Length: 151
Image 1 (cartoon, rainbow, N blue to C red):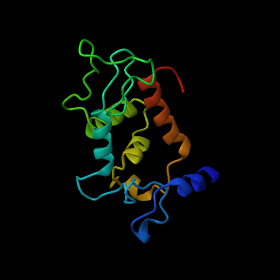
Image 2: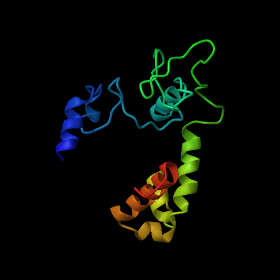
Image 3: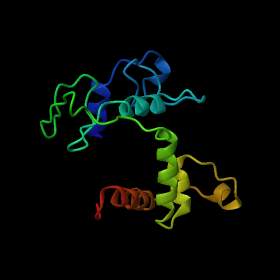
Image 4: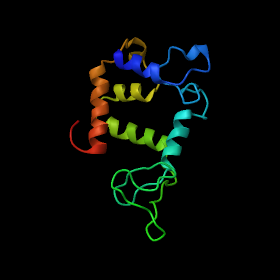
């Protein structure tokens, strides 16, 4: 609870009173949740994917970085920053990957819940909750696949 109060104290001021109870809002004081395809989360991921990448250690840097903050690499004409963005790599590729790898955790109900998918089945109508341990197991499975090892 302390961490949430700290996050709320440090966040930007909400532009709308209806956002006062939210922990996460954009730098502009707006909601991260949109009902349209114009998603702030998708836009932020695209910005991140367009940042320069260090060809030596792979770290993603700020747009105008003079050197890599990870390994100290300094780009030059001969050895520039790595290509930042690949076509087809974006927010929905991330969702496709999570759905695919998360399914390997063998708890599709938990994966669907994390993905925000509606469950209109009879079981979905009767299900009151999904235990946090099930959700955590899926997230840890995907994290282990992505970063290696068991986290």
